[in-house]
Structure formats: C-alpha cells, structure tokens
Image (cartoon, rainbow, N blue to C red):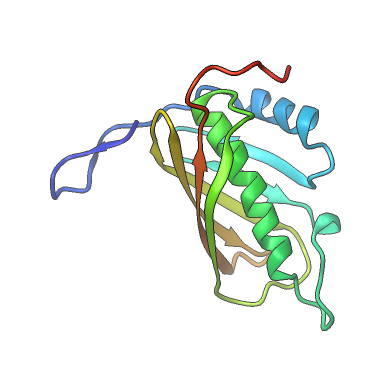
Length: 155
C-alpha cells in the first residue's frame, strides 16, 4: 500500500504487485482472450496495457469511439487491480469516469495504469491513454469493489 507523508507527497512505501507480468498475461488469456489487450508491463510503479487496433471500434469519420476507449480502460484497470491485489476475479467496477481530451486516430492505444488506492474492500486505479503518436488522448479513474470474504476461485 502506498503511504504518503503529511504534506510532502513523497511515498514512504511502494505498492508491490502480487502477480508477475506472466501471471497477468495468463489471467488475460484465460478469462478475457477476446479483449484485444496485451499486457506489456507490471511493476511497482505501474501496469502498461496495449489495446490492439483491430478490437477498437471507430466512429463514422474515422476516429476511435469513446465507448471503445472506456471499455479498454475498464478491462485494463481490472487487470491492474488483479496484479496488485492478487487474483480477485469477483472485483466489480463501481464507479468509472473518463475524460476524452483529444480525438484518437485509429491505431493501438497505450494505457498506463497506476493503483492510487488499494484497500481490503476497494481499489482505485487511474489511467492515462496515449495514441500511436504518443498523444495523451484520455485520463480516467476507475473504482472497484473487492470481495469482502473469500470466494471460490474461478481457476
């Protein structure tokens, strides 16, 4: 869990992922093989996911649709929660917001996720979405409810 010193904003403890990159990639392959995502980094600082262009819907006029971007961020944030909390497949999105800053041209999206808060019953993830040219196209906050008691594993 990240703890900040009063008024300094400097983390005194870094949140460590409980799942490795390979384990998160396996989770994606097992439970969301048709999501069109590729996990490329799991580290104490962040999770990075690529949304593949063939899975992102475009609007008439040739730009990526907002709902397609939201879906990619939602699924990526779910993977980030699992990476840091351990396998919590019963985690549920309870609140999500996205600000679309620029139109995103068709192509891959890089989604950079940070777990802002990880508690026993709730996780909050922030995301920045970059297009193929590296332009920041969206920012998002996703909140997940985590199971309050042990549940059967879906494995």
